[in-house]
Length: 622
Image (tube, rainbow, N blue to C red; front, side):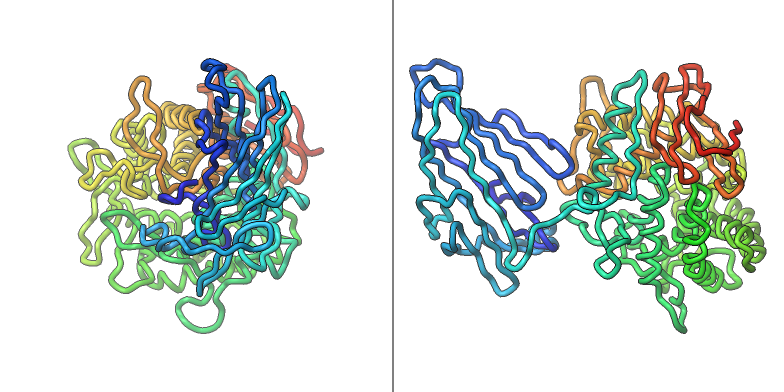
């Protein structure tokens, strides 16, 4: 860590250490490898030649293991034939800057250090931090931020120094997934393509590492959106990730829903029933959007689908009032209008918001009906009226066959740019009996959208671009202006496969799988949407979270889409609609969860499916 850019240890929204440089014998080791060893550990390896007469071979290896809990272990391994005494110096520094300043490039200079116990300490009006060392250093120089040791290395021996970074008053971090019973099943995958196994394993490991407890109700867990920028509760992201992770069980969904139900706004006023959330950038054409609207519409969807996957009746009943309040908010916000408008005056009517609202209305109505509650008929009536209006107002015919508008401006003018938000039109949601809800587009429009998503304009070869490559303002690194965002690609794959467009779905799936290999199967939040060429690799986005919850859960959805599992646990059935073209050859999953029991399934190279383990009495259909 050199103190440049985004480098550092972060805790509680603040950078507690920005610089940690090592010199051995007065020289910086030659870096030979850097990699993520797990979701919460990075490993760096460097080498040194301590004797010029020894030839080109290094005789000291410097290994640095950096952990997300703020610990760094520095180990020197000697291959020299003689004992050595090596001076080791570590130079430390920090600016104690907050995440917002770092992200915008306005972090201040480093803060002067003071010697403190067995290490150094930094203080400023907004916080304090310290680094302690074991064993204690022989020298500490505050003005240079330097700790120094004299380490004796026997032939073939090793010596270690451990640094512990802490904000003042903070105890050690404890990952929920390691310290408590995880709500996620330890599923495994295998098949003709070895990357399938690696991606599922790493995705689950990332989800485990991002689990957080609700401080007031420790039995409930949710996912942090991603490290390092979004380690708190982001309602829409948490719901999206929990939904995509349903094949691993309903425990995460239940905890996330309970946590968010406690944040729901109540009382009089137009926001009553909403799940609050921050505003989010929507790209170069649209103003920021309210993630609270998305979260409010996702809440009943996740509850309805979690029930189909096996969420217990008692848990469903406990969460049902909060879902009813979300649906009441939807009907109240729509009023006599055909569309759900932005909550901020003068905002556009967004295509993806109508897709979210339509899905929430249909799955919410299904949930209310099956739980013996009223209100389902009114939701279906509105959704039924929305479909023809949407097809008329949002579909733009052009010489290439037409496309959905991204939004309609307040004056009614369509905003025609093509972006990944259109995939939400294919994400209709799971109903009872293995059926999916009807979509906002008709059959012909769905086919045209599928062809667009599968074209080079949108499919970069590594996944789906956030904005079409031919659109003005396209930027391959743009957060919502061209970069590949994994969760949107996963929703596209699942939606295309469900609609029968396996060729387009398979192309996107293979692209993400090949991109994942270059990231050691630890998918980042996003990466550049440059067109794939022979011998190229996807370019990392410098500000992407990694690990991140939605991409990790998207890895689960991408792979399990191959089996097409559509459960209806209350009815005691599961329908299987595998991808018949078997784009990755034979693939098998063990340890998934359906109806509260292990579920294992295999898809052959011919696209035939066989269930190898399921709950007793569960009826299977295809």
